[in-house]
Image 1 (tube, rainbow, N blue to C red):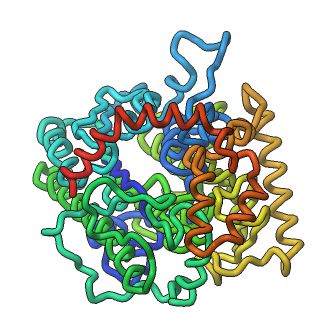
Image 2: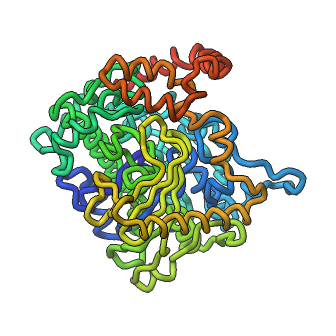
Image 3: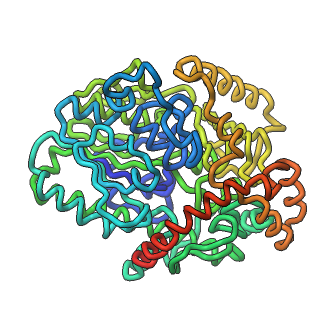
Length: 517
């Protein structure tokens, strides 16, 4: 028995063609889904990249492990203090370590631990390989040589677990020009109309329609697949095409990996999991080409599992990605550390061929905004403590059955459903803090440090940009909401440290960007 885990960064669940997307983005993943289990309601408990994979590695929610941000105190695991044993709890209970203890040869091919200074991702991996010189912008053709070499050397041996990380749907969308555009004649999804674009054009925030590259800048290299602004529906088509080509390019790599397993004669005895760390917004809540909320576009991820002996089907149960990890452990004969983990295995239901799942999920974002989502029934309730300069209200509610792209806020018309969401969130938070060694919500530390990491120090200059681009009302509103953050003096020390960091990294990142363009 063998396990291949293909981790495709920033892959939305609804952009798989097998999930009903109107473009043929994922023919190779579709084939795996036809021969395996397609999970239609898997959500990342914590987003984006660092919180999601930290939760996956540790089996715990960010509220307990402490990682919900990309910078500051909430970007590192919490210390165990005096009770830390010789082998830390995070190490011995990690996903990979549980497989290692069960006799599996564990290996990971990813630049993620280096990109995010997340050494804990390597816990339990006998081999942790960063064979690329990018920081997450490497293309599939740069990742595949190392993966194929590993398979050629070890693929025929028994009981291995290999994690292969592909970044192609993550910005910048830099699939090689020689790959072409398979979707040149395909329209954008029906939901994203000119009316949506025009409405979003007036909204503020990083990665908004007027600033799809962040707060107004651009990528250092040449990225022909992404526009500088979304000034027309032609620009909207360009970003959908760029993202979907990235998905198709990653899917092509999946096909190459599957073919190599077949050539080695081990495909029928290899389980394959294809999933992601988070999704990507394309106009939802006014955000484009990034992942800023705890909302449907960002937290809903694809999950396809082809496991020998488990009958193909569609599973519509409500699951965290941690639940999928726990299920893999049980299927692989490894023990789930239930006293530590928040993930719950549903292996028994898979073997029986029926759905299982949770009644509700709570989802956390702390890197681009400070927000939690409650996914229950047909609804998503969003509670916002810091709007990430998008101007979001404190409470939002959406009916995902009829409005999966979050275009109509139902807070004013469904007060009872809103209250239900608040109650679930309050009870969940109390439970998590009771179970935590440090009973302090890391969301509080993010707010105390000045807000989500990617927004720190950006507001003074961004207010000027808003006024210069006809959005003075939003500039006034954001200054009212964030008076301290609007003061340039508030960020002096922070900006100096970031400028020092930039002097070290930007020349390297520019070269890396040029290599992959």
